[in-house]
Length: 113
Image (cartoon, rainbow, N blue to C red; front, side, top):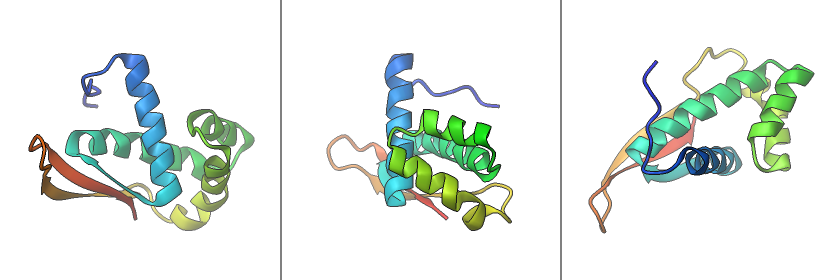
């Protein structure tokens, strides 16, 4: 497995940012961000969906401990198996949309499939 990208932040800031971005992704269905952040969010989001698909009390508690909004976590636990039960991965899609105007950072949209 590839090492985690540091994204120019300390580990606690990075974990908080990823938790917030994953929560926002599940809440809204897609996010516009940089390509490197999108790749990190994809990894975390796909792990959360895989855990939520298990539908045990333990997996629900793991999801609730990671997702920052309780309503979003409940929605994920309730819908994950119905929506992704037949899939064994590939729950997200990253689409590159070109450079950002201010600093020319490569931008992408990450969305749930």
